[in-house]
Amino acid sequence: MTIEELKEKGLIILECISGSRAYGLDTPSSDTDIKGVFLLPKKDFYGLEYTAQVSNPTNDIVYYELGRYLELLSVNNPNILELLNTPKSAILYKHPFLNEIKSELILSKLCKNTFGKFALSQIKKAKGLKKKIVNPIGKERKNVLSFCYVNYNQGSISLLKYLEINNWKQENCGLINISHMKNMFGLFYSQTVGYNGIIKNELSNDIRLSSIPKEEKQKALLYFNKDGYSKYCKEYKQYWDWVENRNEIRYKNTQSHGKKYDAKNMMHTFRLLEMAIEIGKKGEINVKRPNREFLLDIKSGNYEYEDLLIMAKERQDEMETVFDNSELPERPNIKMINKLTYELRNKFYKDQ
Image (cartoon, rainbow, N blue to C red; front, top):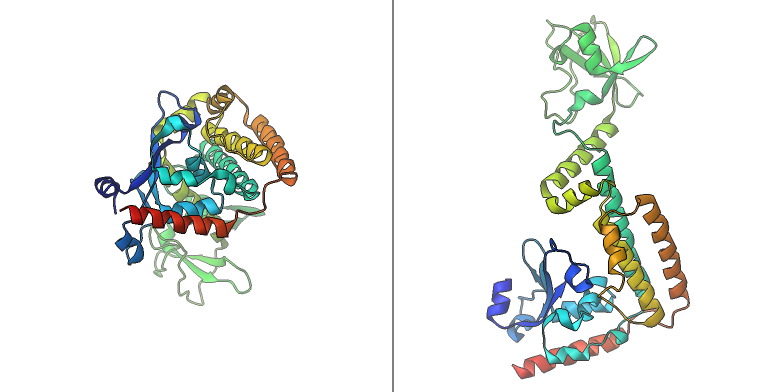
């Protein structure tokens, strides 16, 4: 099932502009995101071809099948609650049957966790980007040799430095295990014996051992920081995957304000926390935000990162207090939602 097929077959029953344009936070460079709901034909729903979700490759256009839509509402998913409460000005099409789904029948204290955790995940993303910007990783990938050290005088030096001092090649080195000493090896050197070297090649992910004649004398102890190497490999992949896939416009915006954090993530942190507070206090969702200037100031990098963390903690504490005193139910009424799901699908299929 593709988006084109949904449209050709007339299966879309809700289509809305979402994201920044729905929040009232769009700027001239903002994309237009679309979210909506579709209804599977009866034969597909009752058969083996159930499709829960359809999206385009960039995920800025997403449609949920009616059952999946109501299932996500039943767990108070923030994105889906926002879709349910899309401002009229951002609704492109809505089937009249869907007017029976009312947010006041679905909202619960679960929103403290769903909106709150989503908000805190945005802080985590902002921190992660800050780390990547402040600590870039060089394109040339280090190999195992860069994580090896040998004892030298009364301390230790890197293996690469040790090889340089002695004018040795790693290919002429041999290693043996040292009993009871994890990741420690005896280092031998010979241009004639024919050792295996310390690594097979630049792509090796571990050291190599050699068979050492008994008469050979050990030159030094070598330590391989295997955990450090594994951590580096993971961070190297994460960093360069991020470089390859990052949104360049968003990245340039981060660079332009010079604060070294993803300001858009921080903006969404405040949007989500403030929406959660409104839900706890009033039992309603206001998708279009009333404090556009404040949120866009955050997105523009007009606040220091540490100050934003303090303000976010204040809002988080307020959210906790609000939900402690809220009259919302602990959880949505699943039986009611299940009944509504059945009744809506039955209506749609009778109408076909």
